[in-house]
Image (cartoon, rainbow, N blue to C red; front, side, top):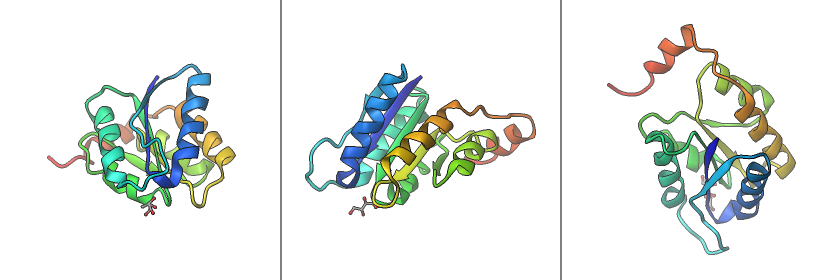
Length: 143
Ligand code: RB5
């Protein structure tokens, strides 16, 4: 898969580790930064990554900030994007199965890196169930 990644200064180490994990798993990574320690505004990195998903240039995105909330709010403003705050294995799976989530969001200030990697793996491996959920997902975007 082609996977966009982005973060703010609170999650650079975790974003780099996620990017490496994705490459090692055979995915192509589109890195929207940030890269250094300097303080940045999370929308400046999360929005272009989410837009890449919205335009179909990336299949999924993994976005990280301190809480995971800021990047999730930004991503969910982008047409065609369904971003989930992936707090545990149940949501990693169900956000895919029932909601066809295409962006996974994590908070580096409260989630441990091994857990972020495991949840990312589950998120990417779980299929959308379609069926009755397809109709519901189609009703999410404003008309
Ligand atoms: C940055 O200090 C912090 O506010 C940001 O990483 C994120 O948690 C916002 O939602």
